[in-house]
Amino acid sequence: MKVAASGTWFPDEGSRMPAGEVHAWEPGQNQTACGIPLKRAGLHRFPHVDFTDTDPVTGGSADAVRWSCPRCQAATGGRRGGKRWTRSDPRP
Ligand SMILES: [Zn+2]
Image 1 (cartoon, rainbow, N blue to C red):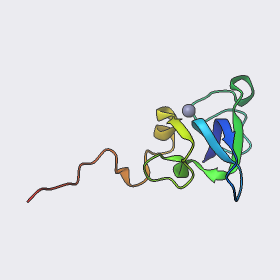
Image 2: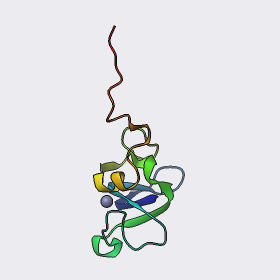
Image 3: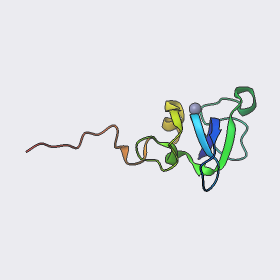
Image 4: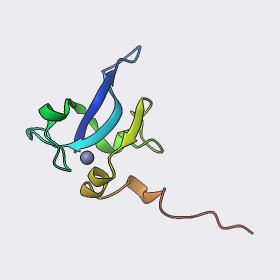
């Protein structure tokens, strides 16, 4: 899955990046993974950005992401590694 987002930002180097609210999007589709029509919602396509990279915790393209759609996360199989949902801090 790639990314559709409500905003765009331009880093000093490299490609444009998603900003604001992000959804998962499959190239070729005209709606997000959770069923929002891209045009009607004014979402921009990012076919060069993986949805998993927009995770604010683990992603490398998430600097400007403010909100990541939970329904799209579920549709793409959840967070990579599942770090947010599993407590793994055993104390001695
Ligand atoms: Zn969504």
